[in-house]
Amino acid sequence: MSLIRPELAARLHRHREALGAAIAIAAGLWLATRGGWLLGAAGGAVMLAGAGLLWAALQRLRFAPKDRGPGVVEVDEGQIGWFGPGIGGFISLAELAEVGLVTVQGLRVWRFRQSDGHLLLVPVNAQGAGRIYDALTALPGIDGTRLLTALDTPADTPLIWRRDPAPVIRLTRP
Image (cartoon, rainbow, N blue to C red):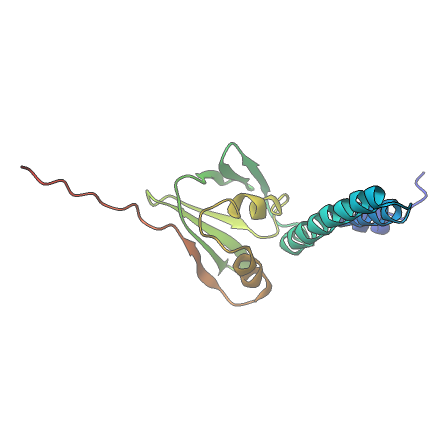
């Protein structure tokens, strides 16, 4: 028998990163008030680290779905995988050419297109979809706030990010 209601336990589990960062900030504040410049500096460093972790946790929290949609998302070895009911697929982050957010049959989905034309649609509320944010922010030139803005607006954003094409080097014969 649990002492915490299941709804509260689910909410605490969802916010666990932010709660851990808040605890780090409180521990840094406690350490800074113990006296002396050394403990004050160490406490300030812990508070700064906790503030950075809190900011990152709040960004991830905005990206993570509140309800569960179809399928499971897996981010592993430089690729995003989605295992849906009867369908699914993988897309390589190194080969990723475009990222968009569209609505298909009333379901909001991430649209990932590789440079070879391979297309993967992943529901934004699939289990584990919060991991996509960390994978996408590693792409060159992507803006994390643009990802979050596209997710917050109900309108489609067919193109959030596009990889710059590789420069063509033309060799001339002597």
